[in-house]
Length: 238
Image 1 (spheres, rainbow, N blue to C red):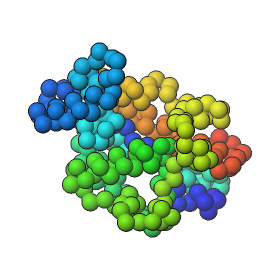
Image 2: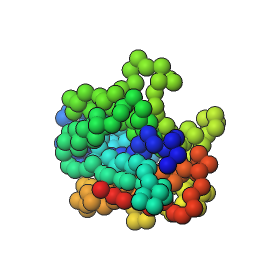
Image 3: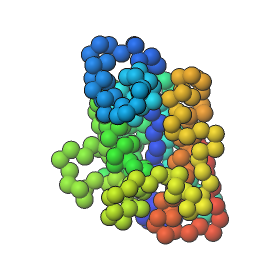
């Protein structure tokens, strides 16, 4: 395995609204959500409640994490590069975050490089905020307070693709399409996670989707680093 892949820990998170029912929010949070929702109404006729069900999950203050999937490059018995994946998921957010943190603390956090797509704008800060809300001390790999930019071992595939151009958002699915990598959006996409969780009560489906995203992320990362495989990347899930 190439040395540059040894310390990469790929990750993806899936999030939903913190409450199934908007009316379950206390009055103080409803007032705060009304301010947040005002920025998303624009010319629409959507109510605060409708916007809550559509968008609350993307805000750490109003959402929660239901799955964290991770992936690590390794060599198989034949010396071929492969990917090992694992998902931390459940209805108890604090418990899954503690399990995820436990995994991180078993690694050398001084060298581990967390990698996600749009991770610097979404996954990493969301994880930090939800850990603090749940009373969990941040692990070194996520705690960037007081650290210089070159001391932060975070890799963002969207940032890699920008090459210094900050005008546009490029989705992981678009990068997968242009690099001819099979999509992870086989039977659902990110916009459906909240409904699959609350209406369908299908956390397993969300977990599988999150794991597929990590596999796609791994292949996109290899493409962006100019690493070509002789065979397709094998995936083993714990």
